[in-house]
Structure formats: structure tokens, C-alpha cells
Length: 498
Image (cartoon, rainbow, N blue to C red; front, side):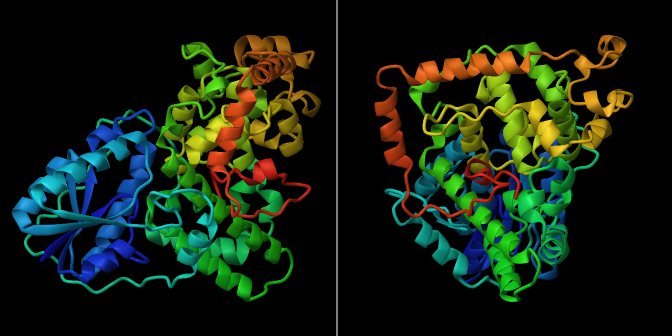
């Protein structure tokens, strides 16, 4: 029997349960479907596609060395699968389970309906600690941990379906994706992911626990594996195993704490993806129905200023410009830019969440949307955390080096005023011609937001609804993350970047 292996966010041949399973069934046809409908969505971007295209090229080489083509087709998933199954005598489709956005959820339902009607068996296997159709969260962590301690799978030997034209990997331009300059974007491909894993575990990672909070130090001290995990050039299990092996060597210095913290954040990664798996509507609907505070009609001028890094709040603007140029931002700064958008600028999280999703090369829906809601105060179960962008600048960039790198128009501002240039006596010409005045008064905007949130939380029925949400989402076995003075629990849960 010929078997089609449908590759989605799992662009590798190592530790690939679906490929290993398919290899035991018959001749294998590895396929990646480029779906224009998905790439035209508000959460997709050219920078993401370029990372994927590089990863596909790398995967194509790996499969060729095993004697198989990587077949790439552009089109609707049902139509492509139906055509390939008909042309090549496919009797079964194998893939990994995917926790994606609502559009991929609908796509998978359509594929399942077509497969049943066509008499094609479609088998989906887990590739991470996320558990599909989980009745409740009790006992989830042991299931996740059991998957992670299982042996990492080597590339399986298999025979390939013969006579299939591989097809071209399209460019972003061919997919009609808007121009998206990202000059310092991370590049795709398994080899680059392995290099990052090795350098993090042997050289870069020792100061991880304390250095991750600042954009100045986080760029090097964080693993930078997030896009490779998001698109599957590496598996989470591989990274867990490599980290466990490194910890077993008992390296000195601060390595023990760094490796333990990294393992915990890998567990939190699955924990948050499980949230979206259990409740897909988190992508579009306030988790707490009484937490709807902001107008759905977004202030376009504020949204544009925030996205472009032109709010007049230097540290926030530097973070946004850095993100536009690199496709990445460290965890605390991700929380800050969402918090300022939601509280100080009072923008709807769905609009700002989509904008950030496009800018993140490592966009992972299951992490992104629960985190966006948490930092916007719409869960109802988390204490509102309103980040002060000026204070964060003083804390994370005390001498303004990061600000001056990404906001060269502030080069002449003295150190004492670089975080609040509007207070500088020489600011008038600067603010008139080169850098905008603050779009809001940080103190007044935070006060107004705080009052609005707490007023909403005093409304009748809010507490009862919150109790129900807590009961639905609580897990006695949620991943454990150590508290530290430098890294409070609220921040420890921000697994957007690793």
C-alpha cells in the first residue's frame, strides 16, 4: 500500500513519529501543501514563509539522501490530497496532530470529512506533549512527561512512491505575500536549529535565568530555538533529551539553574498549546465574557504608531523596531508591548495580536493567543499586569544603549532624558521634526485602564464566572517553574520565546 505522509509544522525526518509509523505501512510519499488561503490570513507573513521555505529546502535534501522526494504542492489541502491519492494509489494518509489557528482547525475537519467519504484512512499522531480530546487537565503533566522521556526516534528507512514530480517551493512573491523586510531574521533549516541548540547548551545558556529579561542580553542568552520548534525542524522531545543529557554532565557555575529553568519553560510551552487545543475560540473570543472592555473599532492611528515604533515612548518603540527587523523579541518585552497596547493605548487584543503574530517568525498559535489574552487582562483569572514602558526601559536598558541602536534619532539626547525625551530642555526641535511626542501620558493612561478593569471585576456575576473558568483550566499537575527574585511567576509563564 502506498502511504502519503502529510508534513505540516514538522519539517524534519528525525524524531518524527508520523514518518516512522508511515514507513512501516508501505511506500511513502512525503508531501507539504502550501495553502494560499492560510498564507493570506492576518496572522501570516512573508518572514514566516521565508523561514518555512528555507526549512523545506533543507528537508528536501535530507529526504533525497534517503531516496525520496519532498513533494511540494500549492493549493487547497482537500483538492491536493484528493489528486495525489488518485494519481498514486494512496490508501492511507499519516500526519501529526496540529494545534493551529481556527482556519487550520476548519481545514482539518474538511480533510477528515473528505477522507471518510473517499475511503481513505487518515491517522494523526502526537508529536509533542499536547493531548487531543483531553477530558480534563488532571493528570496531563504525567502524560506529557511520559512522551518526553520516550526514546528519540532516528530517521526510519523507507521506500518511496516512484515517479512523482517534486514541484517547486514557491517564493513569497509567488504567494502574493506583502513585502515584509526583516533584515536580521533567523533562517530556517534543521542544521541551523542544531547549531543553536548546541551553542545554547554548551556556551550561551549559562546566564539564561537572569539575562533573558533584557533585550540587550536576551538575544544571546535565550536559546533562540522558538522558530525551529514552531515549524518543527527540531522536535521538543529532542530538545528535552539534549538538555537532560547536558544536565547529567553536571556542569558547574550557573548551568544547573539555567538548564532547570529551560526545561520548565519547555513544559510550559506544551501547557499553553494545550489551552488552545482544549478551547480553540481563545483565538477570537474573550476567555472571560465580562472582560470585554475595549472597543472593537480599533483606533487606527494608535495601532499604526504602536506597530511602527512611533508612539513617542522610546523603550517601547525600540522594542517594536527591533521586532520588525529581527522577527523575535525576548519574553518580558513581548509582555510589555502587548500590555501597553491593551492598557495604555486601549486597543483590542485581536488587532494587536494579529499584528504581533505577523512580526514573529516563531509565531505559534497555541502559545500566542493565550498569552495575548493573559497580558490584556481578558482571562479574568490573572491579576492585571500593567507594564510601565518607561520603568521597563530604566530597568532593562539603563544607559539607553538599546534605545539608541534602534532609535538613532535620539542619539543626541542626554542619558538622563533618553527614556523620557519630552522632559529634556532641548526636546522641542527633536519632537517637532524627528521623533513624535508621547501618544499618551503613561501615568494617566495606566490609571484609567486600572480603574476600568477593576470596575468591571466588581460587576455582579464576574466572580462566579471566574470561578468556572478556573475550574475548567486548573490542573493539579501543571508544570512547575521555580521563582526567583529576578523572575516572578507571572513572567515565568511567558513561554513565547524560549
